[in-house]
Amino acid sequence: MRCQLAKLFTLHFSTLVVTPTCSITRCKLEAAMSDFRIRDLQPEDCRELVNMIKELAEFEGLPEQVKITEETLRRDGFGDRPFYHCLIAEVRNKDSQDGPWLTVGYAMYFYSYGTWVGRMIYLEDLYIKPQYRGKGIGTSMMTKVAQIGVENECQRMQWVVLNWNQGAIDFYKKHDSIDLTSDEKWHLFRMEREELRKFATLHDQTVVKGC
Amino acid sequence: MRCQLAKLFTLHFSTLVVTPTCSITRCKLEAAMSDFRIRDLQPEDCRELVNMIKELAEFEGLPEQVKITEETLRRDGFGDRPFYHCLIAEVRNKDSQDGPWLTVGYAMYFYSYGTWVGRMIYLEDLYIKPQYRGKGIGTSMMTKVAQIGVENECQRMQWVVLNWNQGAIDFYKKHDSIDLTSDEKWHLFRMEREELRKFATLHDQTVVKGC
Image 1 (spheres, rainbow over the protein chains, first blue to last red):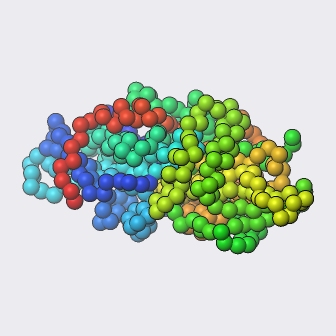
Image 2 (cartoon, chains in turn green, cyan):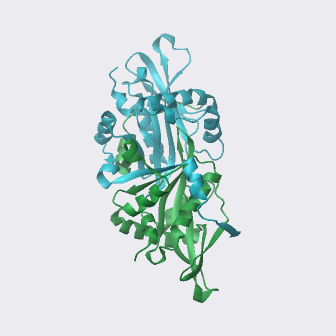
Image 3 (cartoon, helix red, strand yellow):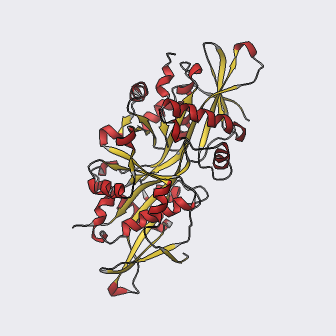
């Protein structure tokens, strides 16, 4: 399926704060669907969210890396101190104006911070199911995340993309994004859980007093 | 100055949550200083923090990129929903056991999130002033961040490093870190404030109702 939004497939980013938690954004579609809307994730969406996360990882050729569960997403996305925020895209068929909204994509983000500029917003994932691409839903979702960033005084939006995803890269560059890896030579490093645990015991650190 | 910790210079990472806010970790130094300690950032440290942020940017060859102010750091690092967390390293000279502690470094981190594994901790910056390197302070700071990550059930620690900082890269690899840019071809992308604001207006999105 040709779709303009295939280029938005592998946004794979990293964000937190004053998210409007009760807003729904609705947009008109010119095609098969009457309209779509964007709303905040609710706990009951987490099952479908896991499915979509797996679909995206499949596209990225790294399906074995998905370890997350519905329970973890429920635990971490809600309450006073959510570890992430997520938007859900929904459509309703023309033929069933009164039918239920179908979940067709998600955009996960959180607030990050840069010592050079302060608040940033990090787009961890943006995914639209294949049959709903090319309608502007993905662009609309990414735009919404950008709006949330601007509203919360974020100075930058960041994300990562696989270097073979030329469609996505072209889209980002068209909107004046910078490839920091190519331009400034930043490489992303990671320590996995077991190595992190091992590293954490490298020094015996004793807490000596409160402050 | 030869120093083992030059290799930790350009940790340039990205994190948030249940940080112990009142602990001080003290470690013994074998050399000129009697000991050092690691504690959480306090609002009154922000002036010195800005200075150290500038010193690190200078080392990285990108001093013009530092726009942050003491006021911004005070606004964003404290309160119910801090945008970042930061550790401060301090030393006291042998000759003045009762003298004040001197600030010699910082480690800024926040909590990020990955759709594949869940909670992650992101190390935005790790910096030790040149004259205090080679004593284990930087390693100790990074270890402390790793401990905070483990305690908060983070599945990974991530950060970025400039590809010419071979000393740092060797250190990370020695501790079984993965270079995701080289190994999996992830490129870090960014949209700066003005481009973000422009992108945020790409679609006219109307909030239609609460939920």
